[in-house]
Length: 183
Ligand code: APR
Image (cartoon, rainbow, N blue to C red; front, side):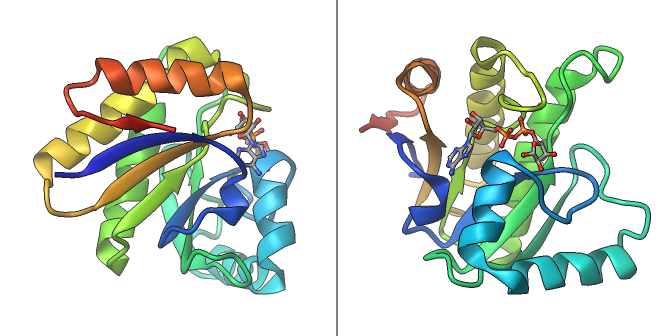
């Protein structure tokens, strides 16, 4: 059974196989967790993202989609870059797009053989998604995925930088039908 966990911490230090980056369509870095991942992971992540832009995603990565790169100097082996919705900017499709980010990311993580995956609170920063709305959507999407693919992952972890966010995601996991652990 897949463990859903919620921790207070820094995504870039997580000892997991894959970390998920809250990127933008440009895929060439930015602020928030995107900036932290590029700063800690190093230039190789940027170089692989640039190559993806020059080949597969010449017009940028659409919202809800994901790509995978190496993780450079991060403890993780892979970085999965996904583009979250900007709150109020997708004609009411924000919830569906936020759920799609999590499914797309888990599809890629499974594809590369990652057994443990860590997510930040996608779209809850610069992209303005109210965390109280985002948490149940994110947890619900992950739970549905691991219910459908019970042997794909050992652990899917949400990594939050503040107590209030940690509480919202912990509550969402507690309400899910998995016996998640909250640290
Ligand atoms: N570890 C975990 N979470 C982090 C970290 C970190 N090191 N740094 C920031 N966060 C949190 C933020 O506090 C927020 O709760 O990640 C969540 C997502 O916020 P953003 O990083 O701003 O991502 P998002 O809201 O999806 O906006 C994406 O912002 O940073 C730019 O380049 C990025 O253009 C993209 C946009």
